[in-house]
Figure (spheres, rainbow, N blue to C red):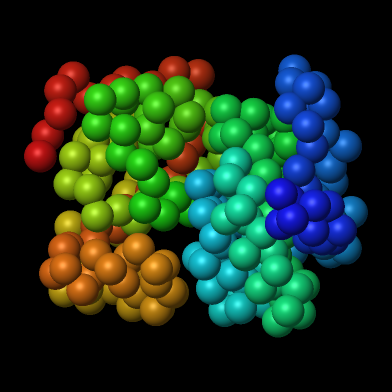
Length: 228
């Protein structure tokens, strides 16, 4: 409760009550760059950001881009937001909301990229996966046409599901590996690691990475059955 109260004073956190944005648009919708960041730099979202480790890592590395970490868990966001304030990182903010309400906060073509790092794979509920057609169609409403979606996961099923979904819907895949740290990829995707990712690596688990363009469509096909 103390952390929740403290976050109310954080200038880098937006956490409106549910009834304020249910079926309503937030006042920052369409204005994040100008009002929240005071610039017109590109906008990158991390969905399900947890403690914001990846959001912070990206913001430190790419100082001419704006980053927003989105999660519903207030205690987690508190840690990321406090770190950003302590380190004086100006190009990062945090939004506390359910991903299902994301369209109340972002307008058409407002975001340039999306990162989804180690989400719950929802093995029994495909509809709740953050890369399912249900969510991808939501992202299309605010992600610019052919904007990039990045997925990092340790889960074989979620990785193959998302890859198959990208292929059957003819998404352009930029990067695809089922073993990131034995691939020829480099840069932020390897250098920024979350606490859980480090744990997975210590257990010799392989990290999967997929990056694809998300074109604007009205409907999407879904893989018929699980692979992996």
